Image (cartoon, rainbow over all chains, first blue to last red):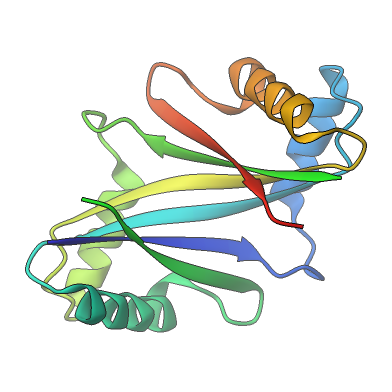
Length: 82
Length: 82
């Protein structure tokens, strides 16, 4: 039983329109201390029949084949506690 | 200088159509070991002039006022290493 969290962020030098929109909205609400906002995704994958090593390998393949755009995004994998 | 990551997930009993779509796409690609996919957001907030405690308090207010729907979502805050 392994749950993996895939965490995806836009690369640092890539424009992030969602982050910019949130930044503007926070500013309008009075949060003037915010310097930057970056908006990303997190995807929790439940793999009940795999051990941690196999689950991490499978999630890496999922990122490469579907979930992450290597041109614009970076990702990390984290094994979640049961 | 404090960077806070806000991590948002749909509540466990809430339908997650994005997660379901990803689950189906992974299945079509041959990842049959996946039992469940939950899709959430992560938002990195840079607060260069606040100490950690103030930054966490500010991010909690941002979640309550704009970023998180308390009916359908849960969130956690994490201070990022410099």
